[in-house]
Length: 218
Length: 315
Image (cartoon, rainbow over all chains, first blue to last red; front, side, top):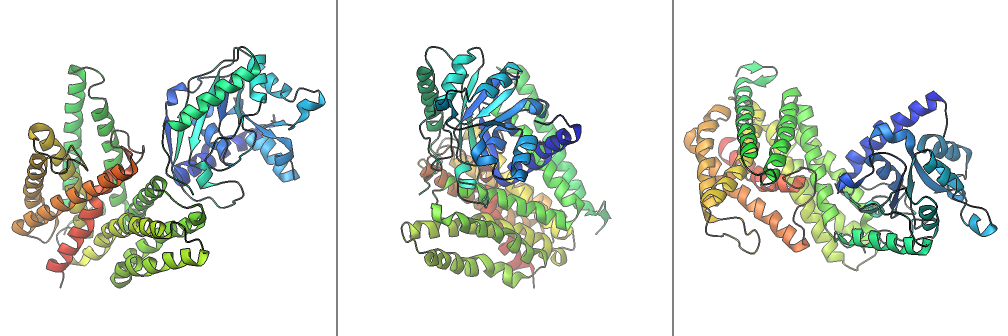
């Protein structure tokens, strides 16, 4: 993220005005158990992923005072396809880029995430890895388990969002207004093996998703 | 008619009355909460807070000018349609088509704004009614076709066509209401409908015994319905001559139309909620539920009062 005060102001205005107006007018959010959101960093918001709007919605749940600490975690290969796009996601959205599959080459792909947590930042992370099928929860990747076990004191907040996969699904460029519901779960902490944590998180997210029966989307 | 701050004087006074009522009600709720257990009146407190927002927004919208009032009403339609489309099952293939459904709102309210009654009255029930099924057929997916056509058409009629009668009343009523203008008529139907909801709820809570529709809306009682409608009739008889060209007898009759239509709108949305298995239509208005929970009675009362007034009081 940039240290340039002008770019920081742009980022603030983008989230304070554009994102909030968009979410208020075009979507309309109902947030269940908002009080479970972390009051400050370090923390991880772990949510299901259906739409490019997901990160923006999750970031809008937190007060603007915490905006400088909010960092969505995103894949390099998807977002750094052009210079403009790369500049925008780095400086305005403020993502932490992660190289998909780089764990197999022996490096730690989540090193930047761990450093961010050590600085007290709040990560916005999608453990499914990609958007998958609209309005369904796919299998979770292992990365979140490694991260949780590496930083066991950091609360991981499971979150389930309904409706965003209808409003702006994968493969569509046009936003169609739909009301969305965000279910916030109780914080989880890394303990035991990373596989245990991934299973516990997956379980928590599935339960959150089942709290409400969304209308059929066929 | 005397105009003060851009509004007819009777509307200013009636608005002041609504605010006075709101303040008194808020003080009562506040008193109840101080006395009783903290969580017992939780919903009532949220409900009252939401009333402040709603009455504030409505007052602002009618006080600025007609255009702002129409935009405000169109926005209510938009919120209602969005809530409806989010509640019902939809087909993935119709996603793009739903964008056109939203587009119907500015167009329909534009007919009202330019006072083109002929187009206003046929646009949704004729043109959109024919257009959307044909568009869906052209897309080529026949699976669930009838359900998709039926739910979309009904939703558009209810949230766009029915509610847009409020804007038409505001614009076309201007020349037919020498007492307080179109805004007087709008104020009359909106405030009485909302008042009727509260009156039916209160009577039902106080003396309600016999259920009207145990399966659809178990909280609705005959005592609440009759008590509510009679209270609305009494208030309408008092307000009508002051805000509309109707004398007190006609105003009382209009009050009965609004009271009964409001009840029917309420149970219709209740039936939709039962069918879909949800308690509230949304979470927009804490204590009330969604916007459809609030404007359900207006979707019936607005057209009913509009056509009642149009039939008897316009040449």
